[in-house]
Image 1: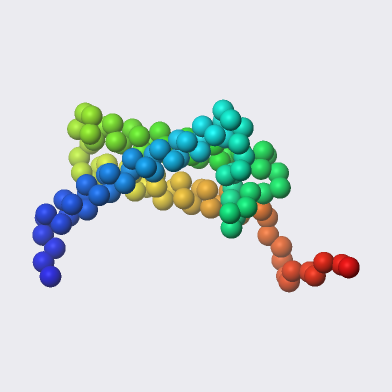
Image 2 (image 1 turned 180 degrees about the vertical axis):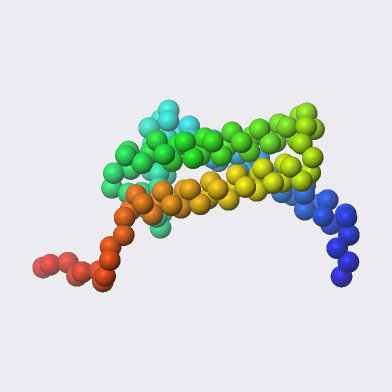
Length: 124
């Protein structure tokens, strides 16, 4: 199978178009935390926020806000001004995507803590 330049070009456009919903959801989460004070999506682990979600909300808001602004900036720079080459915007968007995912994962694990050993049965 020959993976020609046409296929790579299509993958680039798919990745670029996928950045629109990513930026939207990250900026929406930052808006919900900052303005609406909705902490239901802060530091989720298995879909459940930590008991003290308000304590970790500023960090989650900052992670989402920085990631969303960088991705939106990439979209404006590529589509609006054509200021970034293909390699540059893919590198910036890819690093931003992975760093946001790693930072959110680390924050959620830190917020929920971890228990060493076995889970104890509840006392009856």
